[in-house]
Length: 161
Length: 150
Image (cartoon, helix red, strand yellow):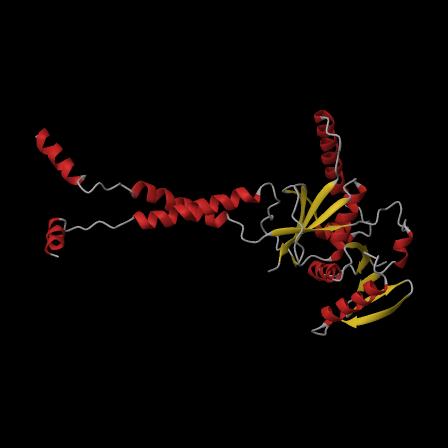
């Protein structure tokens, strides 16, 4: 007891014991870094898109991404069409999107050929649609995808708990 | 002078303390950065079939049932070849359960059947379509095709 008092008197500005805090922080950082690594090449939600909830458990695969939200249709992060224009006509084909998809498909085919991949072009596309969009635009986008050869369409959703 | 300085250094190190402040600074920056960019919502996908533009006709005899769920403004309509079509009011709180029951009946009567066509109106909300797909998947109809009302 007396010993303690003496020590305290010698060091009036007692330093914080940071070791335990450091332990917590180290674990947190490792945990967060690991959660990044675990995600792998899974698709990430495009900012601004509120994906619908679903009970589906199918893991996403890497593919090209079409995001539909507010008034825009984006292909791989680039705005290619607007919903209002696309749904104005009765034509199901969205020609600007179709053009870009064709370009993307040609590139993918070329890459598959150069790499000598046996399966070639897989035609996978995932659609990230906001939960508030109408079927009219979804139908047009899906039709355009299949018209351009992308017929493995997966709809991105959020797993509901 | 020099001696005195050395002496002071030794006294400061006497407790063998690490200088953790720089590390703390790094962590304090790192953690908010990782937390803000971390994705806590898990993304999944639903695979769909697109009725191809060229061959709309079903190929195998198993698909002859052509079971369809039509999402109308007020009703879900379940219909198909040889199935009594029925309408389920969407306003009801248990519309989902009723639809699931109706689909379960069809699945029991036709155990091999796994396909369903979901026919939506142009104004149907995406979330509603996904909800119907969930219900049909839960009922054992694994392969859903999306179609627009003519």
